[in-house]
Length: 395
Image (cartoon, rainbow, N blue to C red; front, side, top):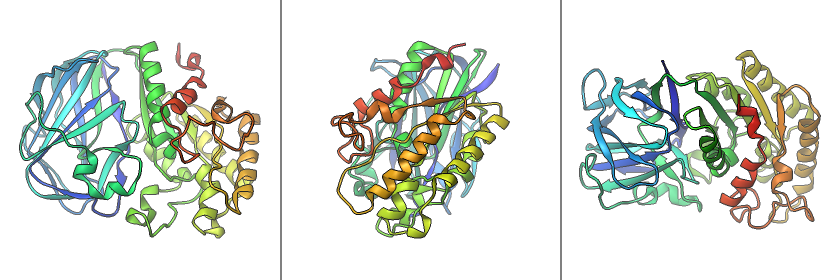
């Protein structure tokens, strides 16, 4: 028996309040692929200077595709149902006796009574593997249903993003105590991973193929770069700090702090090529040799942890006309040549070939992106997932 993570996302530091909550219930439904008799939650308040008080946390479940929520069970920490997460802290709940099967989804309902400014959250735009709704004006943690509000209603600052995200606050992981031989796959990258369109499509595919045997963890951060820390962009929330530390700096912490995945897929680089030009940071323009060096450093780290790591080619990103595109495109093509020809990683996934317009290969094919020429939509995410050989994960 061992604890295995069934769901986890990175907590994103907005470095600014995205909204104030009070007398509110957060309910999130999580896609689960594990079976076991105990569950625990990792609570987190890493990016706030004030305590976050969870008046009540209740875990429950429902059959996949069903509506009825059952087995409402309180979650405690050191025996207490009222849980205070001190600033800059995270910790595990007490283990909860709770029978769960791989074909049942996990429901976590959190009631926050006291007023609190929120500075961080876990985000998904695809919102297929977790979906959050809010009940305003009371504790609905044990109710079957309530009047539902979404993240835009609760966190006004998120409206600056034209693509609506789902948020989870207060915790970053669900773990199941299981006796199954479960493999873990971590997806490391930037917004193309973080937005979860390809992540959710791959999760759906692998969970159907390997019920109870694999768990997929998203380790993407929107705007992330392989070689430089967050791009400074004063116009966006937090001034750009949401883009996170450089991939080469954060990889080991974000992928291996709590798990040791058997498999890692890395897709990162588009922001290294675009951001210095798009946001006028020319001093941060990278070379293909620097990109290679960063990739090799991450591969070495993964292998040191006995993980197999697969590299994804960088997808097209041409959209609006600008005077710097050809310079960035040259870097993308050079990087993809390196990815396709190197022999150090354990495999290559040709995401570029999967989504590009064959007649205009500098573009993602129409119908496969969100309208910005860069980020895959649901069909694009499915195309990406289909490009990944599932035999890698079948043992």
